[in-house]
Image (cartoon, rainbow, N blue to C red; front, top):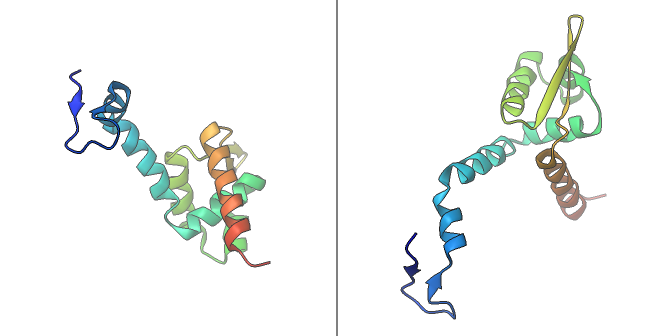
Length: 121
């Protein structure tokens, strides 16, 4: 890969090969944007935060958030497709919880820190 000479010299005249290679991996940035897009909806943030703390079914989530079960199911599908939550079936009931991934743990930690900073007590 050819090194790019930058138009303005701010102490580094060349863009490093490592940075150039990372910037070229647009699919990685798209995946990150997709995850953050899921958390761009306050209802999804609330659901994700709840499921980081305990496993729950659609009916109980809808009761807690004062929303219809179909509306909650819509949000759960999106969160599950993004890999932030997982589900398990027990008989006819489906239970959801935050995925046990580094990505989910980091996002949960970020939410907790932002809530601590911005939420009144």
